[in-house]
Length: 328
Image 1 (tube, rainbow, N blue to C red):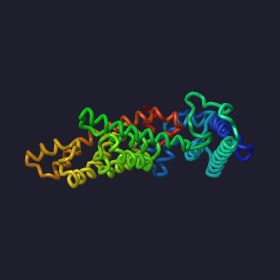
Image 2 (image 1 turned 60 degrees about the vertical axis):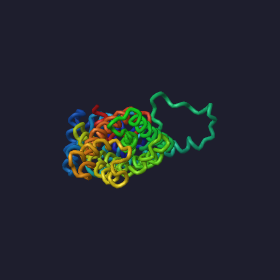
Image 3 (image 1 turned 90 degrees about the vertical axis):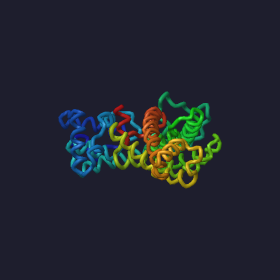
Image 4 (image 1 turned 90 degrees about the horizontal axis):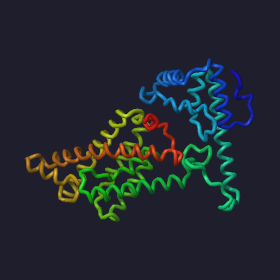
């Protein structure tokens, strides 16, 4: 194999990208479409779900480009294997990637430890991710900032729904953004914070519905990461419907137990109307909640997807767990 990884000096992501291009040329200048097909076959052979097995063509293409600050080791392994590398060679490429990541992280730490005055510190280029070079996640301060923005989005949604008397709740958009962008437990953090601060915007009932907000965060977060529900538009819409059902199942007992359909919850009028039609109370509560929840979670999921697409580049967020963003 040309430019064997073991014969090279200190590695960087640029050097790995250069050697990947060399390997691709030596393998017959395999097209990126063909490379995607081969990687998909490899993953299917390992038992990966069909929806999650297909990598985005742009993701594969970007692995060959210089100027990268991160590179997924599993994707790298699949690429070199699809180009003819055996298991030992693939392991060597993965070690190179990890060494390059450590080198970049060490360099970033050394730069941060230098005493540089604010005037001498170079400003980031327009559109440059805020994550440290070589990191696989955004900087801590960027994560905190994004979480605060998500809490604000939830509170703004509460205000909007209350002022305009909307049927949708709009209190989980920030939760969905955090869950999709950072993971389920970051979504839970936003859920807890925004539900606890509901009284600030005149809606103290939000704290009682904290379990609903938490369930939504877990469904969205694990849905796109563990079950590949972000690979296509249809699967993502199904994920929102699952979130709607799960949230309605949790919300119905809360409404029935704490409010007896007499609080200011958005579904109160529907519950009373169904009761007037001789529908049993619990059935009326759940029916009213599932209808409103489906509308609300579909809207919430789509808005959150759009917000994530806008923020992805700015915050240095990975979109590999949500290929739909790249496709759109």
